[in-house]
Amino acid sequence: MNLNPQIARRIIETVGGYGTPPEYGFQFFTAGLDEYLNIIHQEYLKTYIKEEGGAAVKIVIGAYGGGKTHFLYCIRELSWQENFAISYVSLSPEETPFHRLESVYRSIINNLTYPLSSAELLKGMEKGIEPFLTTWYERQIDTFKEAGIDEGQLEKEIEQYLYSIERSIENINFSKAVTNAFWALHHEKEEEFRQILQWLKLEGYDREMHKKFGILVPIDRSNAFSMIRSLVQWVKSIGYSGLIILFDEVEQISSLSTRQRELVLSNLRELIDACVHTSFRHVMIFYALPDERFFEGPSHVYEALRQRISSVFDFFNPSGVKIKLEKIKDDPVGLLEDIGNKLRHIYETAYGIRFDNEINNMIGLIAQEAYERRFGDIGYMRLFVQAVIKGFHLIRHNPKIASDAESVYKMLSGPEEM
Image 1 (spheres, rainbow, N blue to C red):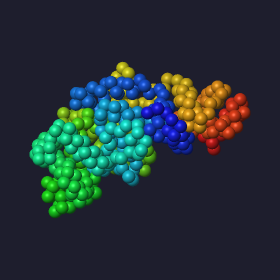
Image 2: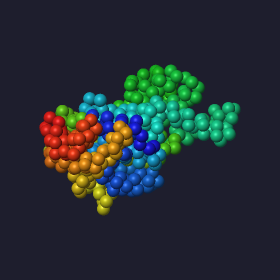
Image 3: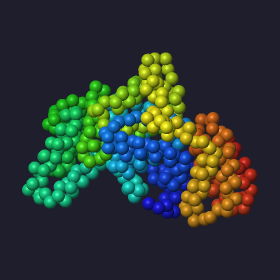
Image 4: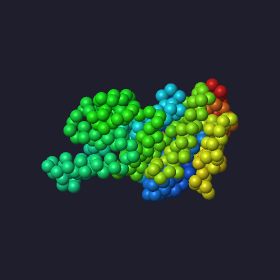
């Protein structure tokens, strides 16, 4: 989809107001990520994960406001191009506690999405197991009809199809849940569908109610990892290339107790270890966090994880685990200027104006100032994009100020402004 004034305005509002990328539109001001994204696309998404049934974990490290979410959005877009299902999970201590493995499963399944087009993203993204199941059912019924299967044969074809799905899933409770959900949709039994969703979404287990579907146990820590593996197996069996899981730490988790921190690291280590086993296939996990200090501690849990993530990802070592976003930027000020020029084009499209080239000096000054503040609590990239868009607003209302870039620089660079 091409950039139009409506999309451009949404980008400006989101980036200028909050310093975060929009769900759609980040593509128009992406810069400096091509080399790493190409490696991930070619080495993993197109080949190892999709074609060879591999599994991998990458740890993405970048400051708050340093481009982690933007990077993960890029991964999501590339994954959708390769027909992967996605689960994008925003981690926070209260809503998505990573120290509880069953909560990890719930977060993954509640954020599940099938590949979406640009138009679908702009309309608003439906996510979670319910729309995923419904879309699966509708598409599979369309496939049966396109194959010329009439109503008299349909039930038998569905039965054979679902039997093949069940055989591909290791956890019998999960397989019974998704196949019975398909039948419930087919027979328009809404209440049964809701009851199955209740179990799948970890919203409660009723032995009497759920055993009629072949669901015999609740989801808890003891079977949570089997559920995650079964989810990946099901996604693959219904026609997707696999599952890409994106964990984005959007809130600091320093408030966790020592025990909770160790459980987070233990769960992360378990995910990493699972990727070496053949039962965990066609899956790639990205875990984004602000710095490596989270892995520092005295216990064996910390040391065990540090050993597993010691390697660094780059062009010469794509097998490396840690993706350090700061390392990507050979010329950070030049990178900011590149982003600024792309945002300038977006701003001009949004408001139907054209800036004089004198604005480039202002972009450069703000880029330098933002980079000099790189050791603050907020990533300098976020400081820059918010400040440069404020500069565009000022010049739009007072074009004469564009010739005095130094004045604009002073107006934008005060502590209270940036």
